[in-house]
Every structure is written in C-alpha cells, then in structure tokens.
Length: 279
Ligand code: AMP
Image (cartoon, rainbow, N blue to C red):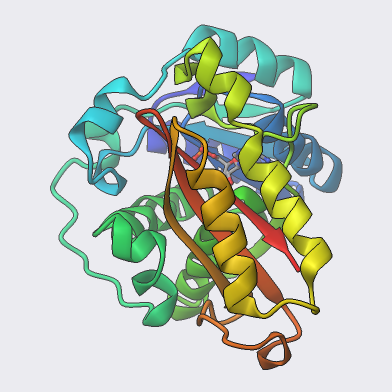
C-alpha cells in the first residue's frame, strides 16, 4: 500500500494506473476505522483494479468544536487495517493540503441538505460537499463507496455529483452492525461501558418498529420509537423522522412512498449516534 500525503503525488500515481486502463475505486473516511469502513474498502477492492482510501478529519463539516477536538484519531492502526484489506493507496493529507485557501463555496441541494442532519448540524453538508468534491477532483474515481449509516449523506453526495456533472458512480453500502445490533461507528469508542451496554436499544427499537407497519400509522410508529428510546435515562432522541428515501421529505402515510426510511439521531450521554431503518 502506498501512503501519500500530497494531492500532486496522488494524481501522479493514479495517472499511471489509469494510463494502463485500470479502474479506480475510492472510499473517503475520517479514519478511526472499524469493520463498517472495511466493508466499503473490501467492495472497492473487489470491484476495481485500484482502491484508494482517504483519511481526513474534515474541519469544515464539524459544527461542534468539541466533536472535532474529541474525534478519535488512530492513523497507525488504520494503516495496518487498510494494508490487510488490500487497499492500494492511502491518501492522508494535512489540513493545509486540502484547504490551502479557505473554501468559500456555498452549495444548495434544496430539501436534501436542509432536513434532519442539515437542520441539526447547520453547515455540515456544505462542508461534506466541499471536501468530497475536492477529494473527487484529486482521485477522479470511477466508483465511490459510501455507507448507508449516513443515509442522508449519500443523497447529498449523489446530488453534488449530478450538480457538478462528475463522472463517478456513487455506490451505497449496507450498514455494518455489532453483534448486539449497534451500528458500527468511530464514535462508539467514546461510550462508557454503561452507555455501550444501553446503546443497542436504538437499533432494537427501530427493528421492532418495522413489525407495526402498516398496521400502525406513521405518527404512531414515530411516537413508539421516540418514547421507547427516551424512556432509557442515558438516551435522548434528537430527531426521528420517517421520510421518502429518495426525496427525504417527511411522509404522513405509508402510501406516500414506496421507499419509507426512518432516520434517527440519539445522544447516548454526550455521544451522538446515528442510525436508520427501511420500512
Ligand atoms: P466516516 O469515517 O464516519 O466519515 O465514514 C466513512 C464512510 O464509512 C462513510 O461513507 C460512512 O457512511 C461509512 N460507514 C461508517 N460506519 C459504517 C457502518 N457501520 N456500516 C457501513 N458503512 C459505514
């Protein structure tokens, strides 16, 4: 695995690969890798001749300084995991490399970037679009892999690729979970043992709630999920919305869409956990 820190070095290396007709798959990450990330890398390795993974904790997508400051960083361990997974290039740039001058671009993806994460983390998706567009420009991948755990992020990245007319295929990969159902996340290591024990309640409740469809109304299912999770002392639901998976518009009836998805964010103590389920 080649480890590169500069865009120029990455471009030179990948130009050689593309020059001999090799396809390039790309997995952008913020590091502190776990099996969820590795499932994306595995798919990237299988479906392309060359697999590139980036590790960059992007400051412009954090609206909470404390979240940025406490975001786990484990580069040496990440390198070993990527090497073992068959990654060909690790791109690990500095902040100065990605933002030599401030990025003043403002994106507008309408509803897709305004609801849910867009509403609760102002500026988050603008930061995501800034960094992903820069990374796409550096890598120019044929395929890019994103996890469905960040369901709304995939919709935003697809919209961005369309808006900028980028010739990249965006591939959505299923959520990887711990044995007890908790969606794998870099932030899980910040849970105390007590919180970690309670955290699977989120996935369990979402799964249970699928049994009520379509017998109970959308509102009743929403209330069930929110009440069940909020009943646990260490948990606080920030939002739970059942949306059309394509437009991300909230639905009122199950018949409003053929693709209902429930998207949730829960604070478990101080740790912000995200998950979703298809109904
Ligand atoms: P992050 O490092 O959190 O920015 O995540 C990098 C990529 O890995 C994103 O596309 C995430 O959606 C994806 N990812 C994170 N956790 C999981 C998971 N548990 N299962 C599948 N993909 C994931």
